[in-house]
Image (cartoon, rainbow, N blue to C red):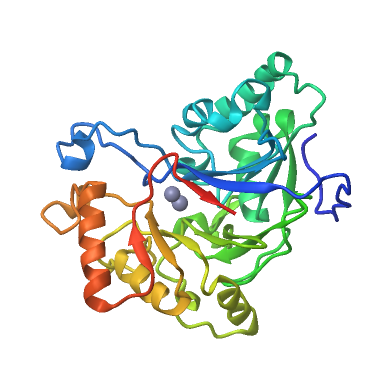
Length: 338
Ligand SMILES: [Zn+2]
Ligand SMILES: [Zn+2]
């Protein structure tokens, strides 16, 4: 277990054709509810969970035979314990694919992995090996600092081993699934892009993901910052390729932390960015995640907005401007077939 270098996966030719589902575990911004805040969003009773999704694969009888988890922030383990696809003997965790190391994407790591291992004798998973963990090398270095115990005890790390600029497709994650490809895409994400060994040094650590089956393409673009202009205006051959693979996707999940673009450079993306990205990428469905409602936005549009407010206002603008496809906020537990 523990550290391992990138290697070529040999596959498993016994695995037959499978159906897959992408299920939302959470879509909340970093801080979820704020203590003492009386905004409409904090006062709703709906559960708030950090951005996370599960990619399940099923055999002919509908049993869960593979589970890839994207990110493991606050509330994710609770959400997984409620998943109909992880009940009893079906419980499994084959891969964790991280977008980056920030706590709102990793803070449930200890509980998730410890509960997974403790569940094994109960659910008969003791023959399964450690959980595979995929992330970019910069994020892996951070994880070894912050979660050394969990990494060495419970995971086998696959790291990309590169320092590439945003907008590059990395080699696919070696899931070994017969009819599904999972390709990391390098992105820029403000102080997520920092060398853990020298915090004054900029180092790209973060990625999104492109999930492609024979019928369906899903793009995961959380967390990203305002310096991902390659999504609107790809320049290098690598960026042109990445944009062409995302183009016309069935679903793209965008970081949409703010309503309006922030004037300070290098902040999270906003709904202004999403509109520009959607014009170029023309997905069938644009989904807004990591939306916040807070603090510096008191009195501004977007402050305290509930999902209903976001849905109403973004749909209005989408229609007014004739933007492509549908727009909206997903729901926890929402399923997307692949
Ligand atoms: Zn985040
Ligand atoms: Zn982040």
